[in-house]
Length: 198
Image (cartoon, rainbow, N blue to C red; front, top):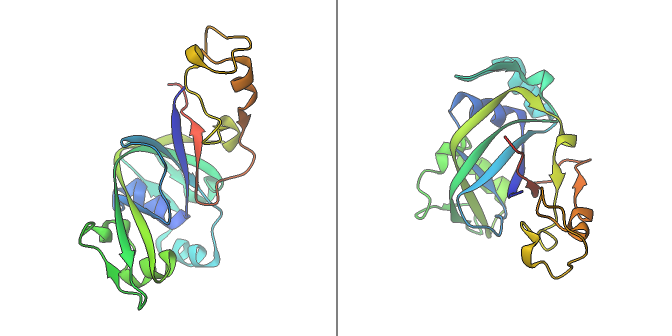
Protein backbone atom coordinates (compact mmCIF):
# COMPACT_ATOMS: atom_id res chain seq x y z
CA UNK A 1 0.00 0.00 0.00
CA UNK A 2 1.45 3.35 -1.07
CA UNK A 3 0.28 6.92 -0.68
CA UNK A 4 -0.93 8.78 -3.75
CA UNK A 5 -2.96 11.92 -4.43
CA UNK A 6 -6.33 12.52 -6.08
CA UNK A 7 -7.02 15.92 -7.65
CA UNK A 8 -10.36 17.34 -8.75
CA UNK A 9 -10.21 18.68 -12.31
CA UNK A 10 -12.91 20.47 -14.38
CA UNK A 11 -14.19 18.64 -17.49
CA UNK A 12 -12.60 21.15 -19.88
CA UNK A 13 -9.15 20.51 -18.41
CA UNK A 14 -9.77 16.75 -18.35
CA UNK A 15 -10.25 16.93 -22.10
CA UNK A 16 -7.09 19.01 -22.49
CA UNK A 17 -5.10 16.61 -20.31
CA UNK A 18 -6.33 13.57 -22.21
CA UNK A 19 -5.41 15.17 -25.55
CA UNK A 20 -1.92 16.04 -24.29
CA UNK A 21 -2.57 19.78 -24.60
CA UNK A 22 -2.48 20.39 -20.83
CA UNK A 23 0.73 19.15 -19.18
CA UNK A 24 0.51 21.09 -15.93
CA UNK A 25 -2.13 21.43 -13.19
CA UNK A 26 -2.26 24.44 -10.90
CA UNK A 27 -3.14 24.33 -7.23
CA UNK A 28 -3.24 26.68 -4.24
CA UNK A 29 -1.44 24.07 -2.12
CA UNK A 30 0.81 21.07 -2.66
CA UNK A 31 1.10 17.61 -1.07
CA UNK A 32 3.57 17.18 1.76
CA UNK A 33 5.30 14.38 -0.06
CA UNK A 34 8.40 14.12 -2.21
CA UNK A 35 8.24 14.03 -5.98
CA UNK A 36 7.62 11.95 -7.95
CA UNK A 37 4.17 10.95 -6.71
CA UNK A 38 1.17 9.37 -8.44
CA UNK A 39 -1.90 11.54 -8.94
CA UNK A 40 -5.39 10.36 -9.93
CA UNK A 41 -7.57 12.69 -12.02
CA UNK A 42 -11.14 13.11 -10.76
CA UNK A 43 -13.46 14.73 -13.32
CA UNK A 44 -15.83 17.04 -11.44
CA UNK A 45 -19.39 17.92 -12.39
CA UNK A 46 -19.42 20.58 -15.12
CA UNK A 47 -20.21 24.19 -14.33
CA UNK A 48 -22.15 26.50 -16.64
CA UNK A 49 -18.84 27.61 -18.16
CA UNK A 50 -17.87 23.99 -18.80
CA UNK A 51 -21.21 23.39 -20.52
CA UNK A 52 -20.47 26.26 -22.90
CA UNK A 53 -17.05 24.82 -23.64
CA UNK A 54 -18.56 21.41 -24.24
CA UNK A 55 -21.11 22.91 -26.63
CA UNK A 56 -18.36 24.65 -28.59
CA UNK A 57 -15.86 21.83 -28.69
CA UNK A 58 -17.95 18.69 -28.18
CA UNK A 59 -17.95 16.24 -25.31
CA UNK A 60 -15.43 13.78 -26.65
CA UNK A 61 -12.03 13.14 -25.11
CA UNK A 62 -9.49 11.52 -27.40
CA UNK A 63 -6.20 9.97 -26.35
CA UNK A 64 -3.78 7.47 -27.84
CA UNK A 65 -5.12 4.66 -25.67
CA UNK A 66 -8.85 5.22 -25.37
CA UNK A 67 -11.92 7.22 -26.28
CA UNK A 68 -14.88 8.12 -24.14
CA UNK A 69 -17.45 10.84 -23.63
CA UNK A 70 -16.93 13.47 -20.98
CA UNK A 71 -20.65 13.38 -20.30
CA UNK A 72 -20.28 9.80 -19.05
CA UNK A 73 -17.15 10.58 -17.06
CA UNK A 74 -18.32 13.36 -14.76
CA UNK A 75 -17.81 12.49 -11.12
CA UNK A 76 -15.42 9.65 -11.95
CA UNK A 77 -11.68 9.07 -11.96
CA UNK A 78 -10.64 9.24 -15.61
CA UNK A 79 -6.92 8.52 -15.35
CA UNK A 80 -3.64 8.98 -13.55
CA UNK A 81 -0.24 10.57 -14.00
CA UNK A 82 3.08 10.88 -12.25
CA UNK A 83 3.89 14.35 -10.91
CA UNK A 84 7.66 14.58 -11.18
CA UNK A 85 8.01 18.27 -10.33
CA UNK A 86 6.11 20.93 -8.36
CA UNK A 87 7.08 24.57 -8.97
CA UNK A 88 6.06 27.55 -6.86
CA UNK A 89 4.94 30.85 -8.34
CA UNK A 90 3.42 34.05 -6.97
CA UNK A 91 0.52 36.28 -7.93
CA UNK A 92 1.17 39.90 -7.02
CA UNK A 93 -1.35 42.16 -5.33
CA UNK A 94 -2.19 43.75 -8.69
CA UNK A 95 -2.90 40.32 -10.26
CA UNK A 96 0.34 40.03 -12.22
CA UNK A 97 1.86 36.54 -12.22
CA UNK A 98 5.48 36.19 -11.10
CA UNK A 99 6.67 33.11 -12.93
CA UNK A 100 10.47 33.11 -13.23
CA UNK A 101 10.67 29.77 -11.37
CA UNK A 102 7.86 28.35 -13.50
CA UNK A 103 8.13 29.90 -16.96
CA UNK A 104 5.89 27.33 -18.67
CA UNK A 105 2.64 28.15 -16.85
CA UNK A 106 0.88 28.33 -20.22
CA UNK A 107 1.07 24.51 -20.25
CA UNK A 108 -1.83 24.65 -17.76
CA UNK A 109 -4.03 25.85 -20.67
CA UNK A 110 -5.05 28.88 -18.58
CA UNK A 111 -4.20 32.45 -19.46
CA UNK A 112 -2.59 34.67 -16.84
CA UNK A 113 -5.88 36.36 -15.92
CA UNK A 114 -7.44 32.96 -15.24
CA UNK A 115 -4.39 31.90 -13.22
CA UNK A 116 -4.53 35.06 -11.09
CA UNK A 117 -8.28 34.69 -10.54
CA UNK A 118 -7.91 31.06 -9.44
CA UNK A 119 -4.87 31.51 -7.16
CA UNK A 120 -5.86 34.94 -5.83
CA UNK A 121 -4.02 38.23 -5.61
CA UNK A 122 -1.00 38.32 -3.31
CA UNK A 123 -1.06 34.52 -3.02
CA UNK A 124 1.33 31.66 -3.79
CA UNK A 125 0.46 28.94 -6.28
CA UNK A 126 1.90 25.58 -7.25
CA UNK A 127 2.29 24.04 -10.71
CA UNK A 128 2.18 20.22 -10.82
CA UNK A 129 3.91 18.76 -13.88
CA UNK A 130 2.09 15.90 -15.62
CA UNK A 131 4.17 12.96 -16.88
CA UNK A 132 3.50 9.28 -17.67
CA UNK A 133 -0.17 10.05 -18.30
CA UNK A 134 -2.58 7.12 -18.41
CA UNK A 135 -6.24 7.63 -19.37
CA UNK A 136 -8.45 4.72 -18.36
CA UNK A 137 -10.48 2.85 -20.95
CA UNK A 138 -13.25 2.78 -18.34
CA UNK A 139 -13.37 5.59 -15.76
CA UNK A 140 -13.19 4.38 -12.16
CA UNK A 141 -15.75 5.05 -9.46
CA UNK A 142 -14.78 7.14 -6.46
CA UNK A 143 -15.79 4.24 -4.21
CA UNK A 144 -12.90 2.15 -5.58
CA UNK A 145 -10.45 4.33 -3.63
CA UNK A 146 -9.50 4.54 0.01
CA UNK A 147 -8.99 8.03 1.40
CA UNK A 148 -6.28 8.46 4.00
CA UNK A 149 -5.51 11.22 6.45
CA UNK A 150 -2.01 12.58 6.20
CA UNK A 151 -1.19 12.07 9.88
CA UNK A 152 -2.89 8.67 10.17
CA UNK A 153 -1.20 7.03 7.21
CA UNK A 154 1.43 4.37 7.87
CA UNK A 155 2.64 2.52 4.78
CA UNK A 156 4.20 -0.41 6.63
CA UNK A 157 3.45 -1.45 10.21
CA UNK A 158 6.61 -3.46 10.90
CA UNK A 159 7.51 -0.81 13.47
CA UNK A 160 4.04 0.58 14.09
CA UNK A 161 3.58 2.02 17.61
CA UNK A 162 0.04 0.62 17.83
CA UNK A 163 1.09 -3.02 17.45
CA UNK A 164 -2.30 -4.66 17.97
CA UNK A 165 -2.64 -7.45 15.44
CA UNK A 166 -0.97 -7.67 12.07
CA UNK A 167 -2.11 -8.69 8.61
CA UNK A 168 0.81 -10.37 6.83
CA UNK A 169 -0.64 -9.80 3.36
CA UNK A 170 -1.10 -6.02 3.60
CA UNK A 171 1.60 -5.51 6.28
CA UNK A 172 -0.85 -3.22 8.07
CA UNK A 173 -1.85 -3.57 11.72
CA UNK A 174 -5.49 -3.73 12.83
CA UNK A 175 -5.46 -0.15 14.12
CA UNK A 176 -4.15 1.34 10.89
CA UNK A 177 -6.52 -0.78 8.81
CA UNK A 178 -9.30 0.82 10.83
CA UNK A 179 -8.15 4.26 9.66
CA UNK A 180 -8.84 3.35 6.04
CA UNK A 181 -12.22 4.29 4.58
CA UNK A 182 -13.69 4.23 1.11
CA UNK A 183 -14.12 7.58 -0.56
CA UNK A 184 -17.68 8.86 -0.52
CA UNK A 185 -17.09 12.44 -1.66
CA UNK A 186 -14.59 14.02 -4.04
CA UNK A 187 -11.73 16.19 -2.83
CA UNK A 188 -12.40 19.92 -2.83
CA UNK A 189 -9.00 20.41 -4.43
CA UNK A 190 -6.94 17.28 -3.74
CA UNK A 191 -6.53 14.66 -1.04
CA UNK A 192 -4.33 11.69 -0.15
CA UNK A 193 -5.51 8.26 -1.28
CA UNK A 194 -4.13 4.77 -1.34
CA UNK A 195 -2.51 3.85 -4.63
CA UNK A 196 -4.51 1.22 -6.48
CA UNK A 197 -2.85 -2.13 -7.01
CA UNK A 198 -2.17 -2.94 -10.66
